[in-house]
Amino acid sequence: MARWSAKDQPIIDPGNPAWSTIEAWAKYELERLREKRETAGADQRELDLALGYIHALCQLLKLPDDIRRERKRDPLMSEGFDLPPPAGF
Image: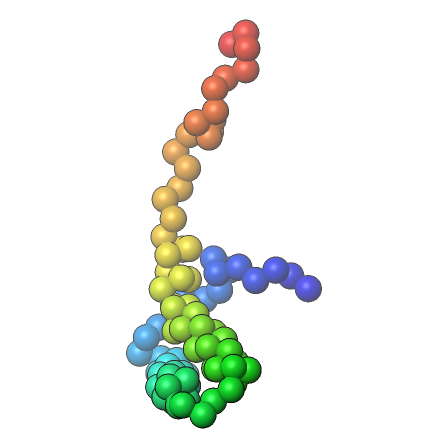
């Protein structure tokens, strides 16, 4: 299985209806999970699971920005990669 890379993924357009639906669902779930973490009767396992889901949904919402950032990296301008030349040159 190939390793996932942000630079190999298509750019996610914020106006895309599919992404808008995913984004709305993720924000709804975030709000629900945050409320769940604030309940007094929750045990530690439920709180840990909710925190993990919150973290994963936040990563999902950052995905379009991560892909754009990977695509906009500055190209290398030097072939030497800022390494000193070998001795004798």
